[in-house]
Image (cartoon, rainbow, N blue to C red; front, side, top):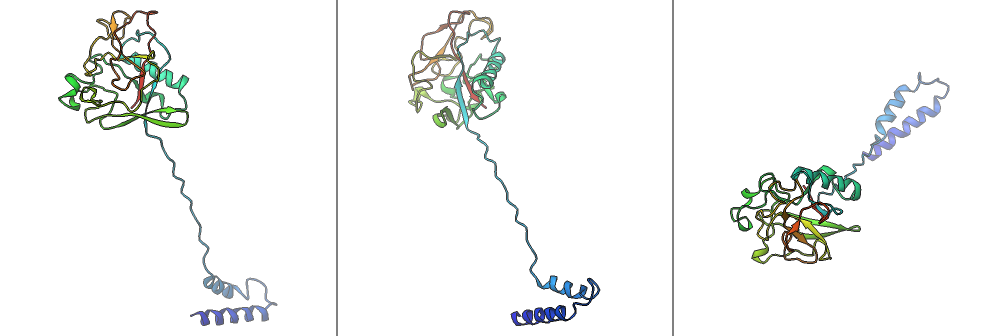
Length: 233
């Protein structure tokens, strides 16, 4: 086959060399068509760019704030405004973040100790089952905990955080839950809505709980400016 190709190409070149008096394309159109058939066809290369999307579930603590949020939805809105204002580099849109608070009606983790009935006890809960949660330390993702099949960490069963939410024990955040994840103390009869009464809160510096490591805190405006833990959905 190679010899035939060389022979055809040689004959074509001889024909072209001896027929220079013809004007293009009158004398050589057929020859050029043959040459194009003999020569390899150029191929184009397509490069595909793969975009990596960060889907890690992050948590962050807001700046100080009293407990009068106007309910769970107001606390969610506060988390989203804090994401935009202070955590713009954190993965996810602001609307993906919600407040780690419960009121028993609009949001609940468990209705029995450590969700003995399973994930069905969750109502609009911010933690997903069997999921890793991270905080961003500079440019490094630090895993804080992994939830169980009920979307919680079973502290009473001996589970712990991998590292504290915050290193300082004086850093506090509202939760409205006891150590067993059941709703308990959410700022009086209007949960997180009128700045009165008391509420449970979590504290930094420990790995044994997220929900009730400190005494109750007063919800009165100006008395306690306690933070909110915000969670990516």
